Length: 202
Image (cartoon, rainbow, N blue to C red; front, side, top):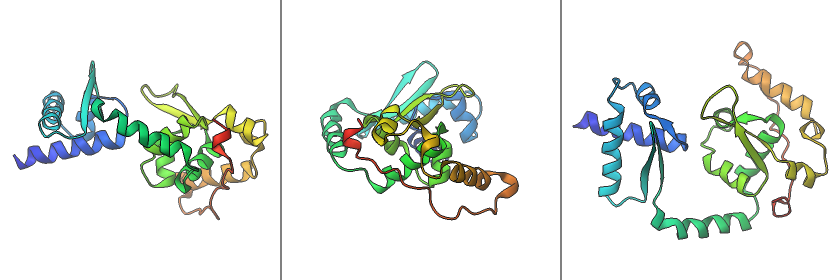
């Protein structure tokens, strides 16, 4: 029973950090489950969420599942999002926006590697503000790439990312930092912050 509880906890952590629909067989692979063990585990977790009166639930689409908030809390979440959008960008939002502007198109996993934190909510906030856009990754099914939006560049008065201050320098430094053979290369200083009044860019 303790082992099963641990599997449920691992599944919950995976669904939380992933934040998007994920295939059952991918869950099995990541959690080291035996083939066919994923579906009953997901169903058990779904039932536990329902029975415990939690604010989350699982939705299913064929062989995929995703952890989402329950519909009855939509009003609370709507008010929260409105309040977030009416406020200035947080330091976390500016950091993510700068990385996406300089390095985009960029995957969420690469963004989180560079930032060191889960960026799911930050990405959603930037998308709702119209500051970034996403498109399907042509090399990976069910994955997305994020880039600065045309509205952001229009608001900044530039023609594209290459016109950002120090674009070539910082893009090159980050790529060296990420290269396996040059892991000890340190980026001297953070990426320049993209200064924007996001209220006028949405």
